[in-house]
Image 1 (cartoon, rainbow, N blue to C red):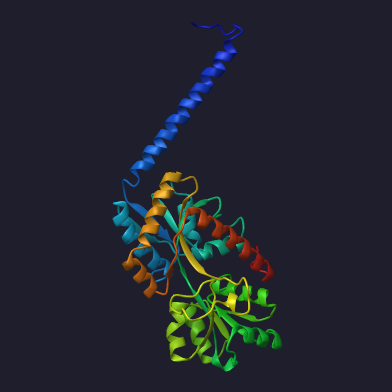
Image 2 (tube, rainbow, N blue to C red):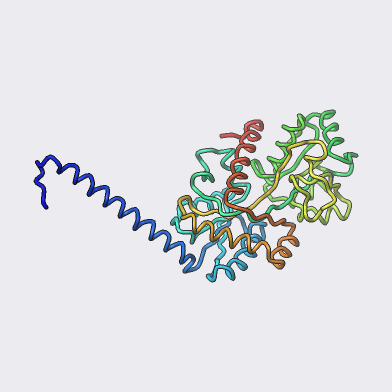
Length: 336
């Protein structure tokens, strides 16, 4: 039956027809997404990390890619895109197709970027979506032996007695080691002087050994040989958990500063809007890889502690990290 446009029931039929068309399109779209997710992956996956060769991100990416290739049945190809404190790699992935074939090893630097420069950095909560945490690189609070302190409480007491006289080094303004020092200042209520080193953690370690600076928050693997040689003194782990390389070293949170946690973590993310079944498939692959003894061995030997978990676990960490570092950045006068 054909209704003339002037017929009283014509508008009703038109609305019903439009509703049916929309429902059909939605059903086709969902079916297509499900089919796509079922077939995922059907071609190589690109894994981007935001720092240079030999970095912890490089190690994490390559060992994970190798194992995930076996699990997914397709090559996982690693690509380094260093620059702008991890921003270049993050932007590349955030603007990639939302299909799971381009993923990103996000790091704590991406969270601190958001905390320091909101609106100017890739928004981890809205432009990317979490897959799973991969690992953390524990930092160690180390001091020059001449300070004469044996634990965190004694260091805090010394810093209070000598405001601004203690010098802490880092790899640059806004870097995780710098923010760790600022977090220490905020929680301990002390004043210390920051000394940034553009040349990396090696320069800071060299000056610490020489006694030109007082303390650093250093990746465990970087500073371990100097701790063993006795040229620097380890006081505590900067993470909430004990570091794999130094299981007998208590966390700062247990030795004078409750709530202190400055872990250098890495975790995989995909462009926001990537289908949930694809995210879940990648998350299963990440967690399976982290249970493989050879993967654990490579990470452990590089001073990296494996993590894992669900996308929701990672999302909660990101939210808490951005909130924490935003407060620290504001207190340090770093917010833009």
